[in-house]
Length: 233
Image (cartoon, rainbow, N blue to C red):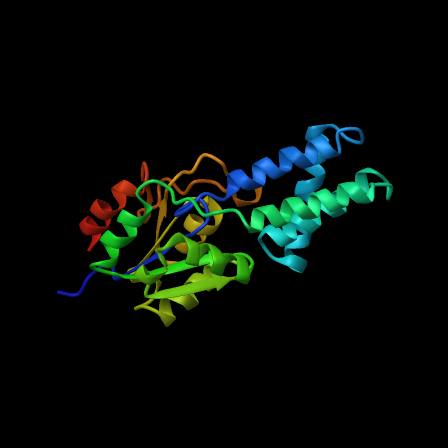
């Protein structure tokens, strides 16, 4: 009997390993450095606006985030930001790029469990070099049949990936912590979308929960994934 579910995609950042908390810590340092020029809420609003408009130039990831911090610092100081502050922002970005990878609970067990019975694909977006570094340090690389590092996770992205590496989106599932990128977009493509909450969510990745959709599922954590996959297969 042909399986209903044949292919499972995993998000990487904040699904398999910690990521957003390092951005939050760097943003707190950023606010301290610019405290004499703008209050924290205003500064964060300006930074978020810079990140949104710069995605089309720099894409997702730490490098684009660092450039957005520098741009925001220049704006709020009206071109008077000290070179020492710019240097510290660059160093903060470099520290983020060198930070060791820490797996989230159940990450390895979950991937190993479903990889024993299904084709598994890592689907992540961001800077190519940084995402490759994180995957190598995670020790999970050998568990995946394919790795896709993309510039954006759209409905069409998922269709293309699951046609290229599977039997199409109708027999595929995407697992992740981002409602917009890892759940809504895959469901729009015809996949199952499995939401695994992380707690820290980037504002840009928020979206309305498709709670009534038959292919939507929220899990407590990755420890519940294998059982859910088994029920669908």
